[in-house]
Length: 174
Image (tube, rainbow, N blue to C red; front, side, top):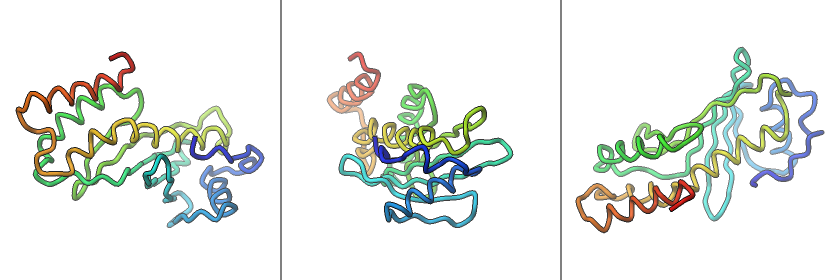
């Protein structure tokens, strides 16, 4: 979806998938930060929203930890109430989990394995980005409601109905 321009030949011959991704980002003049050989940060713009990615390559496990921040800060007065929502949302996910970190930063986090495939497989690198964006986009409106002090954390039946509809919609059969 977001990185359709990745060509497999760009990534062939790289042991660390971040090396191939860095070359792609450089070739397209997309900004990124590479604080070490095993870490990379970059942003992806999709559907009118920026998603901040932090990738950590674990060579010993042939895995990559992926953190995707959709730029949503949960209001400090909503932290308690958002945890029940996180449990409901995370129970529906087939991969990864949403967490709230630090000063209320919402993060979608997961780990993907590269064992048995080329560590620099273009399709796999593209899927990493797409998975983060797709999961964040799916729940973006729901989590945005927790940027205010009240969020969905009240007993208003209309608000609870909206929450139920949003969660049901994500299941695909409302």
